[in-house]
Image 1 (tube, one colour):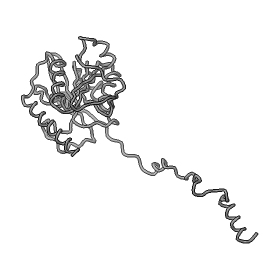
Image 2 (image 1 turned 180 degrees about the vertical axis):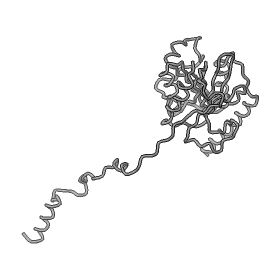
Image 3 (image 1 turned 45 degrees about the horizontal axis):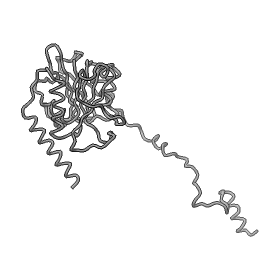
Amino acid sequence: MSEVQLLISAVGYRTGINKMDDVITDIPPPSRLLLEDLNNFTPPPPSLPSPFLVFSCANLKKNFSPSLLLIAMSSPSLHLLHHLSSKNLIGTLILPEIPLAGNSVKPSLRNKSCNIYALNEADKMIMIVLVQYSVTSERANAVARLLIGEKITPQRVLILDSVQSHNFRGRLSPDETIAFKLETSLERKHSDGNASFVKGMDYYPSGSMVDGLAAALLSRCQLKKIKGTLCLSWPDFGTPVMSLVKSLLVGNVLSGVNYTIDEDYEKAYLKLSRRKDRTDSDLYT
C-alpha cells in the first residue's frame, strides 16, 4: 500500500468517513446548541404592572352591588351608551400599557379609556362600563376580575361585543345584520321563553368561538355564580346594526328606566360608519 493510500485510510478512520458514506445526503450530527436554548441568553421581558381601578373621592371606599352591569365593547353599543346623557362618571379602569397621551379631559369616544358610569334608578343602580381600548388575551382575566366580583358585585351582567369573523363557523355577509347570545348556566336556568332577559335572540352557533375579554368576563360571571349574558352583533359598523343594538337596550334591557339620549347620536354614528366604509374601501382599491 502506498503512502498516499495509507494517509487516506488513516484520515477516513479518524473522521468516520468511508467509501459507503454520502456526505451530501447523510443527516448531519445534532448541534451542540439547541434553538430553544438561545432564549437562556436573553433576559425575560419585565412583567407589566397590574391594572387597577380609580374612583372619585365620593366613591373611593364604596363597594358596589348594581342590579345590572352593562359592559360595552362593540362600536354601536359604545356609541349609544356614550350618548346616554343621564349617566354619571364615577371611575375608570387603568391599564398601564395603554398610553393616556392624546386623551381629552372630558369623556370622548376618541379616547383610549375604560370609564365606569352610574345610572341611578330609584333604589337600584345600573353601572355602565365603556371599554374603548383593545385588551390582549394575556390581560383579559386581570381586567375581568377588577370589573366583576371584587369591588363591583353585580346581580346581573350584560356584555355587548361584536362577532369576530375568524371565530365564527359559517359565512358572514357585510350586508346582513345579525346578533347572537351566550348565557351563564344561572342565567339560562332563570330565563326561558318570555322570561328571558334578552328576548328574541338566537344562541351563538355551536362550533363558533369567543375569546379575549368577552370570554373572560362571561367566564368570571359563571365562576362567581352571577347571571350573565354575552350579546354578539354583526357587523361592527352601519346604521342597521345600531338600530338592532338600540332595540335591544332601549326596548328590552333598559325598559322602564328613566334616561335620556343625546339627539345627535344617530348623525354622529352615521358619519362614523361612512368614514369606516370609506377607509375599508380604500384598502381594496
